[in-house]
Image (cartoon, rainbow, N blue to C red; front, side, top):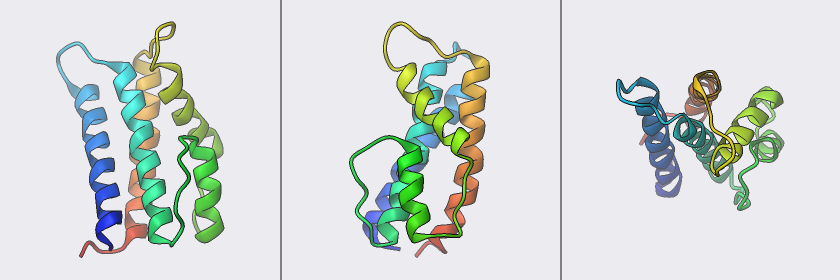
Length: 128
């Protein structure tokens, strides 16, 4: 694994840790942050996978578009598009005033992120 790919994984892990911490804190939870960091974790994992496959990822945040690029280089990869849309929407909709995430939305985003992370990490191979 290259140093650049490793950096993407470290950043993805930090986003995942932040989302998990917010989901489990006994304090007042920031559901907006859970949604944002869940999407960011998934985005960084997909971009890291692209880089490992020799593709420079575009500067975009739409997980459906990133998924299409990953499937083009790794045909064995597959993820439900509706779940990628949920994460993309969750990160965007709750970042600004006017809408707030609640527990069911944050739980759904964190669940998708957790399962996607578990599916993607083995594709990077053993850490070196």
